[in-house]
Image (cartoon, rainbow over all chains, first blue to last red; front, side, top):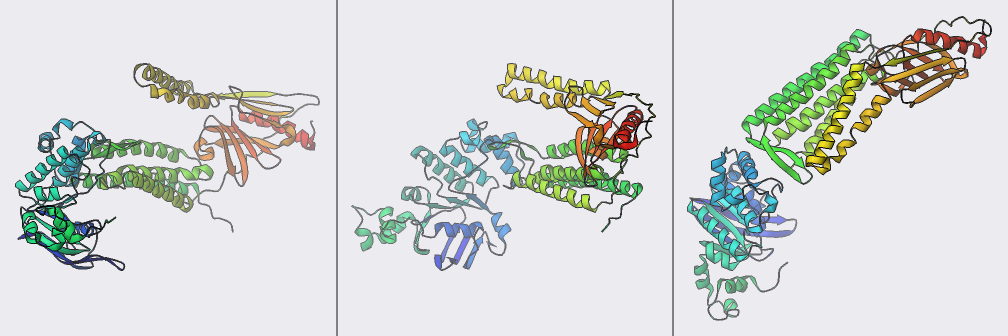
Length: 253
Length: 331
């Protein structure tokens, strides 16, 4: 059974259509990347899945729960990591872990907290206030908090944006580890390198519509002879060539 | 339209209900709500906020204990004054509303609200502001709804002391707060000074502000612990032990002098130099204790009250000169 089923999703803001009949599904244990230029409809799609934005039309099922008709049941299956997280800056990450575990209804003892921090490579920082963590540590901590209740589906919104290569690689390892524990992940990214490194399947969207879906290698193979892609490629086409070929090279703000 | 006033028993019963029993129910219900929310919610919640946001976490029951530890003594404090109040009018009618307001404000704003909404961005600002607003609203509504007694009338003029022709009489008296009370307050001020010295020299230079705390305490003590009243042919002078505040009323400005019973909290809202409005006229009070006091009524209707021993003699002397000044002459 799919852990996420999006069917004919439409999101309109007044007269502007942000998502226009989008459909895709994520299987259990899968890392799925949603790729698109700015304004493609990624954030609107995530907002509907997170229950923050009602869909204009279409259905979204999280592990079988309809986000419109059973929002609490659907939300209880989700873990969400936003692009930038703002935790209580003066609290130590040990305090924050206990605090957020409590808010999820979990009772973690000291060993349980240390175990979670250790798995994210943060055990040495447990007495540090959140504000003293580096950008990569903050993102890893944010990932830790969003996985505390063992969600069925994790939504990661550009999780490695602004991180240095080392931190990015470490976060990819953590994301892979989450999948290894049985979780499914939907992530949005602008990084083709990231999509190829961690995603089992990707979907390229633009103007709210699905342009291509499949494995990163499969999509490259499918569009390698497309004239829009060939025109851009210097040698063998890459995923980035396919992405720009399909979405256009005009700069989006 | 004239207002119907309640008798003392009715006003007292209403004040006890609104100022003691209802706040007690608020505390108990608040404790129940905190226990219910605490047992079903997170084990630890944010328990302290600094200038940069939350900076400490702890168990939810810290708030349940704090509410009980603060609100029950405060309620007991108000209960004593409501039980001892001689009249529920003027400042006295606000005893019960203030008791209710403080209890509601603290129990809801810094107890129930924080525990029930823990984890929400509404905590603590919205809960404190909300608790404050609900507390003030409750106090105002109850303040105007409670039955009240009629305002105390001015003290009846004392019988003037008979003076012979050319005879001059002067009277002076004073009232002093109990030595134990004065010593306790002074000890608190000294404790702050010692604490400030220790903290500043040993630990925290930011504790300098502690030196300021004893200043208002000592000032209040200096202006309250000992009052002297001097009555003579030219009028009356009331002054504190340190010489300020000081009030002089010329005999020409005095209509009458008598003895009145003063309840510091009910009549003036506390001790020390006080000013209240009664029947639309200003009323100064130099209040050191509960009991008989000299009340002087001035030509413009305002009055001055000073708690002083043997107030009856002071009033009789003043009546003699006030009567002479207004054309009564001296026998």
